[in-house]
Image (cartoon, rainbow, N blue to C red; front, top):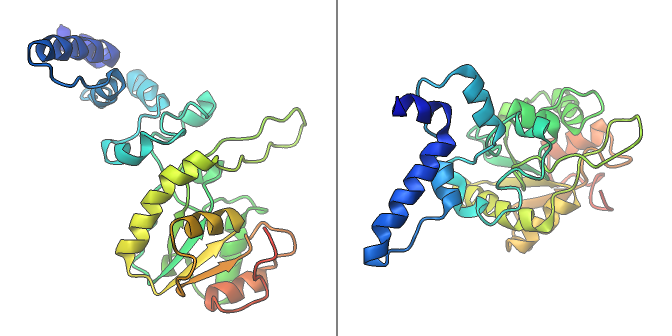
Length: 252
């Protein structure tokens, strides 16, 4: 009966484990695990979980244990910055898309479509940066699998509040999230042995400069696909040959 109860209500298991740990630690003056960490671990207990309970767990957007080191210091780590609907979409960050390429494309952060798809730069919205990149790749007869693709911030920053009828725009990631999450990008760059790294947009450029890549000759900084005046042909030039200059920085 206890097993069934804990499967349906994992928070009860977290509370029970917390009490046991505190009681055992007292005679030995052991450091206590935080309640949040115990809860995070216990909520991964999902064997034979009914569909309704599984959906409830996903809505909590608990980060996987492999992300704890950096996500603990990130304001997006508990997903409280997102609406309940956006929290229900996925329960972990969007990692590097590793296609075994020697060229890495770096963007700022996922939009809601990427958050849904679980892949960077993957929106099907005709006006999106992803569709402009796709069109540019068609011109040079390449596809996304020709590149590795990453975001500086791997979690969706959320939508700006808007009273207008038009769909609200995505928020820019806050600086604390950039600082925490860019450590994952730094690891990917250091282990990826990339020959070329194309960075789209000013926020991504600033983050990489803060990581110490300002003078690294592998990096080429170009304007974001969504910036005003950036054409498909210019993007195609940047993707085919990152030294191509028409979209060189003037902002965006």
